[in-house]
Structure formats: C-alpha cells, structure tokens
Image (cartoon, rainbow, N blue to C red; front, top):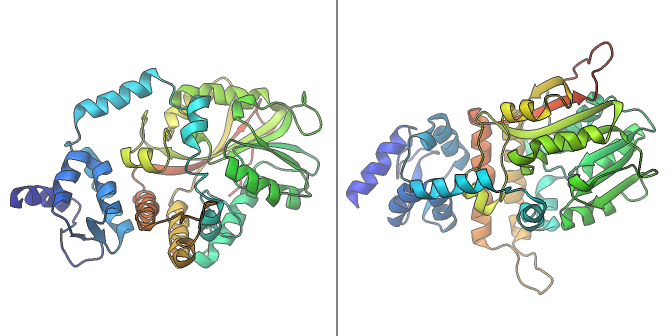
Length: 393
C-alpha cells in the first residue's frame, strides 16, 4: 500500500496537492482502496470514490483548479486503453446523440427534479452561465447576472416588438418569458425534457409563448403560421447535446427556419480541443452522451450555411455561476434532502449530495483554470448583415 500511495502522491505533486495535507486544496483519504481505484479508473474512479466517501477536500473547486492547470489528465495513463478505444469506436461509428438516445439518456439530468433546480438556480431558473460584468461574485448577485445574460442575448439579436423568435432547447422557459415581457416578441420554445417543459409552460402562462415538447430536428413554423420562418433563432446551452455527427445538420435546420435577414445566437460551452467524447465521470453521472464542441467543429459545421458575425467568450463567468449554484445548493440542502417523490420516498440521499457537490465544484475549477472549457456566445446571420454587425458587450 505504501508504494501505491507514493505513486499517487508523485502524481499529485505535479499539481501541488498533498495527500492528508492541511491546505484547503489538499485531500484527506479515508479509505486506502482510493489509490488503486483512482490509478486504475482515472476521473471515473476519482468521482465515484468521492461519492462513496473514500476521500474529502475542504476546497474541491481549488483541488480541481490545480489538477486542470497541471493537466494531470494528460499525464495519468492508468485507464485501460481497451476501454478508451471501445468508447472512441462507439463515438466514431455510432450517432450517440440520435433522437432515441437523446430522449432516453440526454435529458436524465434535466428531469432529476424541478424542486431541486428551484432551490439552486434562483429566480431566473436559468441553468446556463450568467453575465457577471460589473457584478461581485456572490450568490446574491446570481439573479442579476442571469437577467443580464438574457438581456445581453436580446440586445445581440436586436429584438423588436412583434418579432417571431425560435428557441431551440428552451430549458425552464426563462429566456422566452424575459424576451416576451421585456421586448414584446413572440416565442416558440422546443425541449425534450418533460419536467422542464412542464415548468416552462406554467412559467410563461398568459404570454405570447408556445412551449413544445419537441426535438429540435422536428421544428417548423411559428405560432401563427406553420410555414413561416423566424426573425431570430437562439439556443442557450443546448448544443452540448447535439453531438459532432449532427452539427452540420443542426446549422442547416437553423438556416432553413431563419428569415433572409435573420440572426441566430449560439450560447454554449465549448472545449479548446476537438473531441468525440466527454469526461467519463461526467458522461456516466451528469450529462450522458454530451460532447463539447471545439471552434473547429463549429466553424466547419457552419461553413457555407451561415455567416459568423461575432464571437464572444466569457467562460470565466461560469466559475462565478457554478459557485453561486453550489452555495444555493448547500444553503438549501436541509430542505432538499426532505423532498419526496410521488411514492413518498426521499429523492436525494447523501450519495446524491456528494455527487452534486463533485459535479458543481469540478466544473467550477475547470472554468477557473481557463485551460479546457469555455463559454461562447456566437452571432450568425443568414446572409450577412447589411452595413456590418455591431458587437454588443
């Protein structure tokens, strides 16, 4: 055991992390099986052993910040190569984001329970990165940051009263509600999460908003006319679930539903590297079959279909957003753990709590490191903006 512990410590030394150290980002190991599990299983072993209570860390976000800054994932090679090869072959020859797979797996995370998200997301119910420009990073400013993000999107799209807007992947209906109330537009929102659609319909009642339980590949027409195209199209945090084999088709669908002088705003997480898979722990427990597109994927898929007008990266704000969600989650855990399902069983146990903490804080550390994940808002036009597009920040 001494040798395997030393092997693990040698790896963590590359990130200035000590096993059983006393700094906030050092880890405390409670079960010696941790070392074998992590060295053999990589990120999956790291996450599952945390869920099982085998180790702890006072500042998990800082732990991951250091791990990612040191790029330990590229230095640890203990994961069985045959397992990686198997996953890559599946991703290469199978469409992991086909309609059936999206319906079965891709929405599990969003159907986990509206009651949980209401305790975590705040008034906006926006489950995407907020726009923290000029705001201090505190949970109290989360709502301001989210509404600033929604307003930024509306301004970038140059919304005007009476316009017809299509939102692909409308989440809990936050954008649709905001745009209809503040900009006087009509919105069609599509989503394949039953729980989110249920919430969004209630959220947008008595507004010129239509929420559809519908895959983005089946979208056609506005509220008033099924043959009419849209003035503007927006997607906020949905492209992560589209998948590399579907990117070109996605942009074609946008183009086919957009008016001649229309604009499309793409808001989504991206990766600095072109990959056909995501982190193994994230894939298993949080976002099954999700893939983060790279700039290469986006530009190649949109080439010849839409005109890129503006590219805005504010990925550093995702760190602030995730930490605000984490603080809300922890503050409300005493209430969350009492929530029961329709059968009277408790929905969220301690293992779920540890899973959720690991998810939020590993993502916060990732965005803080600025090494891999980014948050992009990209504005496209159908045929180019006459006189040029003026960027909004």
